[in-house]
Length: 104
Length: 244
Image (spheres, each protein chain N blue to C red):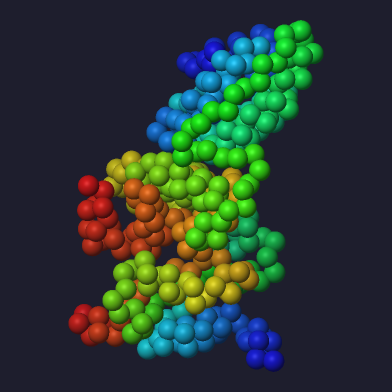
C-alpha cells in the first residue's frame, strides 16, 4: 500500500522524502532541470519528460569522513529505484556535513 | 599481410580495384591499448588469410573515411565484399573477429579459389583473452569475468579515460560537453569512449564503476567521478595533482 502511495507522489517529492530519510539530511535544495533537457533524443519517447534531470545541494551528517566520490555514491545508491525508473541525471552541486557548513 | 592506409587515394584505389577479394577494415587509435592488442591479432589473421585484404586505418587521422563508415568507437572492424558491407564487428574481441572471418571470408575464398582453408590459430593477447562461450564465472561485482576483464582493459586504455555520450567533437549531452570543455581548457590529453555506440559497455560500466550516470572519468584505471566531482577537483587543484 505504501509503495503505491509513494508512486503517486511526484519524483521531486519522492527524492526529497528518500534523501531526508535515508541520509538524515539537515537541508536539501532540489531543482528540476528537466525542461532544459526535454529536447534530447533520448527524452522524446519518455512519458514523464518533466522529471528526468535534477540538481541537488544537500547537507547530511552521514557524509562525515567520506570522500567526495563516496558521498555522491551514497546519494546515488539511496536513489537506486529512481534511476531504474526514469531518473536520467542528478547533478550534485554540493554535498557537505553540518560541521563543514558551519566552518564556512 | 595487413596494409596500413597512408592516404585517402590509396584507400579508394584498393576499394575500387578488386571486387573478388573480401576486404577487412580495422579502424583504430594508436593510443588505445585495446587497439594495440587487436592490431597484433589483426596482423596475425592477415598473415593466415592471404586471400583477403586486411587494411588498418587510423580513425582520427582519416576522419572522413571513419565518418563514412559511421565509426563511433574503436576498434571497429568492417567486412566488405563487392562494394557491400557484410559485417561490422565492434570492440577488442579476437574470438568475435575470428568468427566473422570464418563466417564471411572463408566462404568467399572457397568460392573463388581451390586453396584449402588453413584455419587461423588462436592468438593469446594477454589481458584481452576471451572465450567463444562465456565460462559463467562471475566477478565480485556480479558481472561475467569476461565483461569485467573487458572493462578493466577499457578503463586502462589511456591514463585518462572519459566515458561519455557522443564524442569530443560531437557531444550528445550537455554534461559530457561540459566535461570535454573543461579537459580541453586545461590541455589535458585523454582517451574517450562513446557509450551511446555500445550498449553493453554502457550498462555494464554502471555496475563496474558503481555509478549510474555518464560522463565518467577514469584516471590510471581508477574511477574518479562524474562532471560534478571532476569540476570540484579542478577548482581545488586536486585534479591537476592526480595528473602527475
